[in-house]
Amino acid sequence: MSDNIKEDLEQINERLDKLEERLEESHGEFSQKTGKSIGRDIGFLYGIIIALIVVIILMKLIII
Image 1 (cartoon, helix red, strand yellow):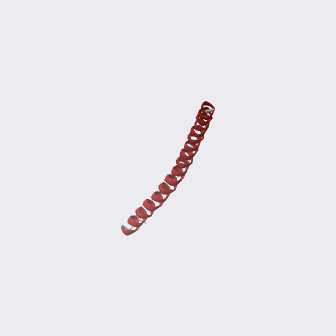
Image 2: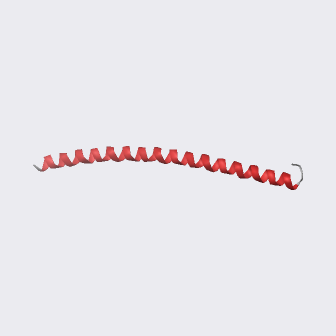
Image 3: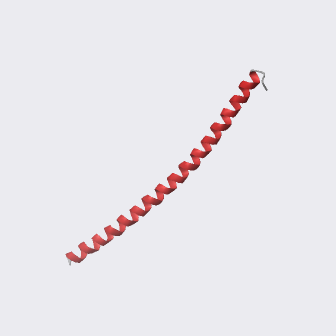
């Protein structure tokens, strides 16, 4: 009877390990997608800020 319980526990542990692995993979993919979108947004904002600084500098030099 104890052998049966050990086998059941091993099977449960294997299933839990597989589930944990799938969960880690999906969490990694989600984090990667979120990171990419945040990086894109930050890059867009940096571009706008740099463009505004260039316009202000050109206006101070009376080029525009």
